[in-house]
Length: 186
Image (cartoon, rainbow, N blue to C red; front, side, top):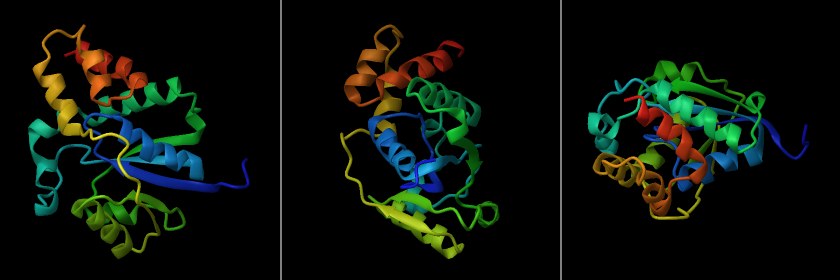
């Protein structure tokens, strides 16, 4: 155990799809801070209540991957990155449901990257539910988003060209094989 790290932390996101460079930069910070990271996948079953501060979250076009597909992609990516399975858990988390917050361990801090109105609201949600928040004001490494990645996937018919286009847009090269496994099964 590294005595400079806290025992555990949570990170969270919709990760539709995982993993562009800014997703990894955020989650990697969790692994730098803590011995164990719980990755909470929000809107896991595409049934969260509508929120005007994040209206895009409920659009089916913005949620092409199932919870299980996102978990599979994370697991494959973390293996490639050399992160042992004992260092993380991946769990569903409906961020719009107070009952979900009640299930979280109040002794485990929650890492939140604050960069938008929605991310500031997430800080409020965690704090309102009596949970510690570590605010991360980490600038985006690259102007990439899940929206850009989803558009590339949707508009690229030739799967052989997809990896290069995604990496150029900011998708993590180490995440390509997991995404391709998912897409080839469809």
